Length: 482
Ligand SMILES: *Cc1c(COP(=O)(O)O)cnc(C)c1O
Image (cartoon, rainbow, N blue to C red):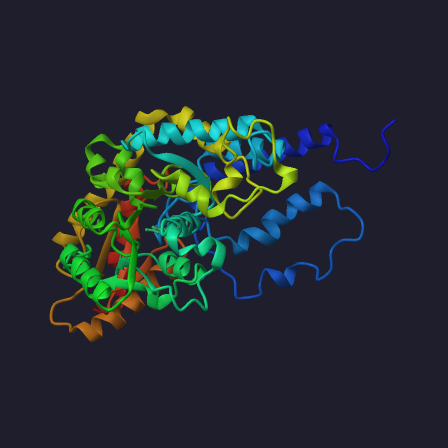
């Protein structure tokens, strides 16, 4: 006989599961009419929730009711066709179903033995993705949660490659015989690279920012000079991070020229293609990963532009043995008889426990297929190109960077206005655009200029959404009194 102390019954799960799936389906069928931005002041959501946890269990009806009543007013809807801020992303419906199943299985894939399907499906989807991106077979892959964590592991492996210095055993501090390490990234690189340097004991001073050209791409000659200068001053260069699709403008560093330098100088080359890498799935965009076959490691985030629900970051390296050397530490209770024949993913990073992330990716890749995914990414790129043309043709707007992917950087620039006035104008314009909560754009600063960013990447975004958004942007500029 079962005691009272059971889980929700399968019958009740079925009932509320159907109800919740209906809620989600309804949400997506009306999403065009739902504001993308919330309308709450700080603390506005928290105030509606009890300070203490419920003593007794509550009915599911009450919990589900609070989705609409309490949470929806405070939702920023990332899974929305009118979300154009930061990088626009998609948790596609097949991906959501994959998440549901992963939650149901609730496996911990730390070892092959703790769930063979989790380990082997991860190997398969990463190999499929590798083929889709046109990366060589010598690339070995693993899934981490985010690009920040992927890049941190890359830099840890780069450091481990300096085997003679025994960082793994002796650490980095208090050792007079050890030179200071230096790594390199462009002045447009993502802040996660700096965070990795902080976390790994490289320090902020241990990362040298290489200037970028007028199209925001790292200047290889400046990189070579910096390395020579550092060597002369007794720094120990060990790693270069190139970016394919930088966070501000989506510029592409010249990876082949950077790879030449890294080969000559024997430095680990890591490519941060968190956003831009996905575009290589489109045959005519393959070139964005030119030279990446020569990298030591690369990160691409399927949770950014491959329709996989957050979080899923794909990390590849040609030197898994070095990564393993950096992190493998197997306590007795985790030893298995298959250790010599199988991959135990816990050996390749900080975390022990691992979610079954491969499942959602598998659903997405199978449901849409390689061609279906490529066609959707191609559409985003075409929408962005069309928007860029309209900005170029408009006398009161100007484009601020090339558009290699699906993100457009631009600003209002009515004739006769100076740079300092333009910054204030564009800040006000962005606020006015977002104030109505219908569309959501974000900004960046490029060489001290305040620039609006329009990122297209949600699977539901259509040409009519962009028409509407462009209409709103022009109207808001007019209303700002010009
Ligand atoms: C988004 C992005 C990151 C950070 O990604 P997370 O997965 O959120 O850590 C890093 N680098 C680039 C180029 C990005 O676009």
